[in-house]
Image (cartoon, rainbow, N blue to C red):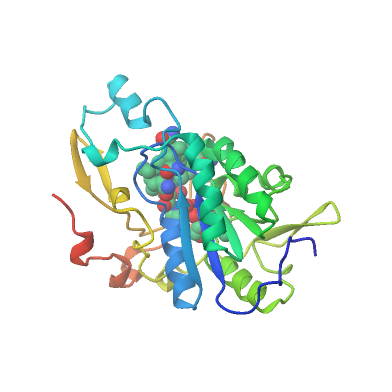
Length: 277
Ligand code: B12
Ligand code: SF4
């Protein structure tokens, strides 16, 4: 087993620090992390997040580029969205976060566009020698590439709900975890691959945990106005196979799920999450 320091922190509470590389001010929150946070908390784990949304990593935002290209209507985010911190501060803050949080597992969720930023964040977290997993679309479709990074120990290929919980359980008790479906890991310079599991039954997912995120993550411009909004997942997967899209390439989930099978609780409605319309 080559995972750094795995099994050395079995006592006390087990903490997972999510790291979310993001485009500047791309405010809609990552649903995967909100779901994982809810599942992990339900199972007695502690969860924290480091999110790069409010650092000035680009000259202008992707939404501002769309305004410039006449794709969307001009909009004005409030003054609280103008207080962005520098990229240098981002690396310093991440190191501080890891020191203060002292996590047992660091968990990255990575989209392809954000892989370069993820690499620079991994350069910071790898100095702490804490077991580190990466999941999401990019590790799913470029697993060897991501796993070849010496700051990444484990990759999740495909869906993470069951694999991440199982991994945390086994790391907490010090058990071997190398047979967990969907996870790939490194050993003696080789990559070992576990098979992909059956698709997750979405009805098993608890309501996403929104409390993890900065409140500004719930605001998004649309048609020139800024709305408070969230994401409700009613299906996963696609039966088609368009060559430019990765949805069809996820062969393990070809059918969608009828939203009627979802519990009402999957669509969170408390006043705190009300729509601003
Ligand atoms: C909602 C959505 C958005 C929202 C929210 C994005 C977000 N951060 O979640 C908004 C509008 C902000 C958005 C923006 C963008 N998006 Co978008 N978006 C989607 C969409 C429609 C659904 C994503 C979703 O919530 N799925 C549900 C969650 C639960 O699934 P998931 O994220 O895949 O996570 C599962 C697994 O991947 C895995 N997993 C994920 N992370 C981790 C981490 C760990 C540790 C583990 C173990 C497992 C794991 O487990 C999860 C649950 O099983 C997808 C298309 C699709 N149908 O998937 C595109 C999609 C993800 N977006 C895409 C892109 C390119 C973008 C942008 C980069 C576009 C741009 N240039 O501006 C931006 C930036 C994204 C960002 N970093 O925030 C591409 C990604 C392609 C790629 N190869 O990476 C997709 C796939 C669309 C497409 N087919 O091209 N997007
Ligand atoms: S673009 Fe992607 S999600 Fe849309 S139909 Fe084609 S394969 Fe399915």
